Length: 295
Image (cartoon, rainbow, N blue to C red; front, side, top):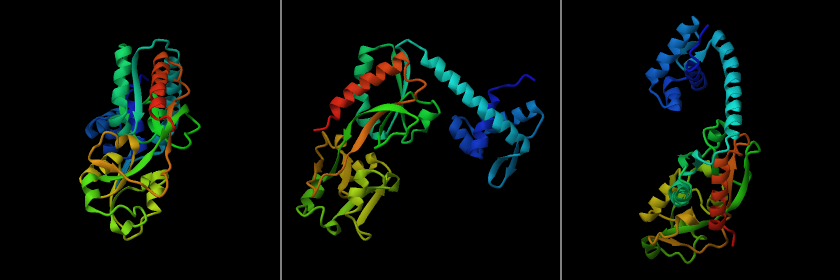
């Protein structure tokens, strides 16, 4: 039988996500395209693969059998792809970098500009994702991440420490007594990150000083926290590079230093030796070591 192998990725996406909308979002297509391609695959195989339930699409027995083999095929093809790309000796082409939104806004633009000025054959794709799944799925070449211990499945190097600083807007500081901060939290309003950041040192430092009755605004990223702070909504904690050159924000003196977080450059072991990835990783490392050198 001559299969249309491209149907497999639509089959796998629906099997993994269970709904047409979620599968479509993963593949960046419309949900009608997912349904059409899956139905075409079933017609091609002359077998039904899914049961449509109230909870979404679930694999039937035939679908489960195909899924087991298809995932093996996908893993084998990804391994071969990584090995082929890993043998590429040309320092040109696209390098995909995944990082957080704050790094993408504050740090990477100037660094990538310097790199492309010197190496015209390089192109970049920057993905603002807070997880490392894109490295595992080989959707990115390099990850720039803050963490204490990176996953064992990735290789990389620690390049510095990101420091955190409590701050408020200049207007807020003029309107509130800050000489006792942070021992008087009830006298202030705060902008805090949600509990997805609960393992971060800065989160614990602030959380330990607030009470259940402390007024707070909760956001899910640093960019929102900074915007709220600039608009005088309270005190927050930000990476120091987000406060630099912000004349509307005032760093605050604290009772002790807020613990920093380690900064890493990480890659997948199967693709780390391509010329373009090696070059970009080295240049990023040199720039970031200077920028985040520990005092």
